[in-house]
Image (cartoon, rainbow, N blue to C red; front, top):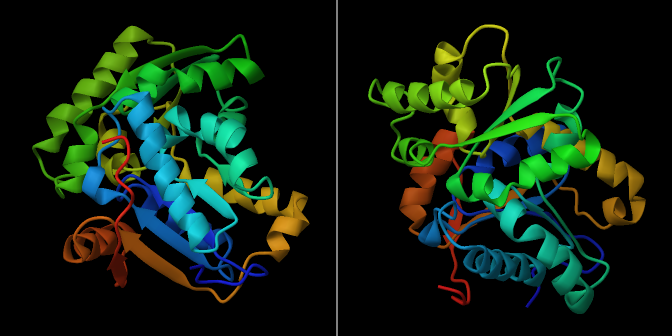
Length: 283
């Protein structure tokens, strides 16, 4: 049963875990009057090392659940889901579910911003193993700027560091420096680096400490938020269908207590959360 009327519903925001909260935070700053629902599939996180098929099934289940809650616009605040599931959902599933609904990701807005930033035409990407192996960033960047040299670096230890609250611990230094050195060794001409995972902003103080001066670091939150505002301006029919009470509801597929602890860390505020179950296909 839908929890909102067909005339007014929140914007759905989905992530495999907690990282999408860094996107949600910026969305709420950019659109403070709009309503949001955040769904974290924490029970099955992380998605970064899972197959394309599994990520697609998990993401579709979450999107359908947010649709059932009334959302007509869903943001995949997850690079892995955007890389491995977004296109199939947009092209194959939405026409069957409801052609008037929309699912948007975080990769395209980031790419559109980054093509104008690099002066050397050499761009780096930090991401999960799944995002880097998908080559979504090189493909999207080359659509807009074929001359760019794009180098990806998988950082499999960064998400566990963040989700185990070790982002500011001295032990994180080794793994932060390790991946920075690997990326810049692969291409010393890089002058712009995309943080291609929504967890990574919590590591920014350490990343900046080990990153050489003159290299621009690009987190996604503000970019995605500005892109969504522009999208709603260009699609007034979608904007008119969003409820506007300035509220945000949180759902998790894992422990409420754990989500509260981590969610408060990501957002810097106390929140309330409800546990739900997804269908479980594709496990």
